[in-house]
Length: 420
Image 1: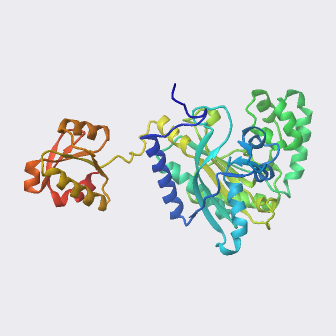
Image 2 (image 1 turned 180 degrees about the horizontal axis):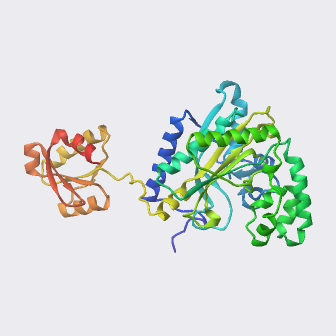
Image 3 (image 1 turned 90 degrees about the vertical axis):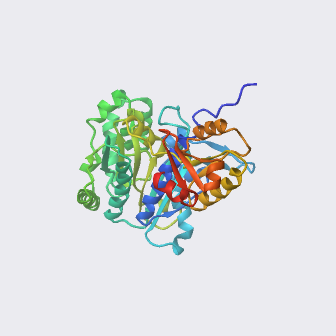
């Protein structure tokens, strides 16, 4: 019988990849907390209606990508394909007890059905932040700054911030009508998907990657030429704020994002180190009407979702070193009758001091223990033999270069902490 493989589009995570992703998650959490954001978790699956109502019946997520199933009670459920709708749904009944604006962050798995490729898995992890309850351009600036800081501090230099405004319910209807008229006049040059989209959500045609459609859309009217005064002022203040924060950006008048709930600000961080189809590492925008779609009162919001696997892939493709994994500081090796008892005490002390350490569970020859130490990827082997036991010292062997140092037993934790 052959061993079972994981489902297509998913991966088993082992060191060092699992540790790299965990380290990215911890870094993201620390960054979000430094800006005053609070952790939020929502269920892995939701009522399907949530995503149909918010993402749009004609969106690719709803029509092509959702993992949807009926539970034992006959209710339609969907594995979470994106984070914002679920966060806002969870926020609404708690709104009176939470600060305003409410600043949330999450690092969670998501699921979308698609053709698996490098940087596009069916199960993936995202770091996201949401600011719920503020319509101020300053909120947009802060959200974008957090994403930019996260990517910059990872050493990524081939990422570009693309920025646009998609207007709101005041100015977008007239623009949609003009865009639809333009698309109808060029219908014979559009793909099947774009012909359907031009009557359901014509702005989504800008997402099409077909060369013929792109050629047509290059001549299409753009929303930034049709913004109302309030949307234009908001967009101008956003750009001024990003300039003041020294965050470079490129205006992309055809950027619309793939979800129907976006209003005004839309943005993406795109990596030139990734294939074009998977180049977007982070995407987000403003969603001032989303709470109303979910039965709440009008509550503005802004947020982003940032792909953790794509970030790691961009780090690799730019030739950068991934964050060092959570390998143990030392492997305690014992030789002789007195050593095991002393080693157990050393292990307890090291772990209480926050120094990661391990050893064999049963007596083994020193050569076998050294092989175990090497396979554990520990930085040092802490060797205790009869002489070390008698003199209350430990011999620290660097498993990289083989250099050895003798350290008093009671100083082992501090010595390792400085070097690992």
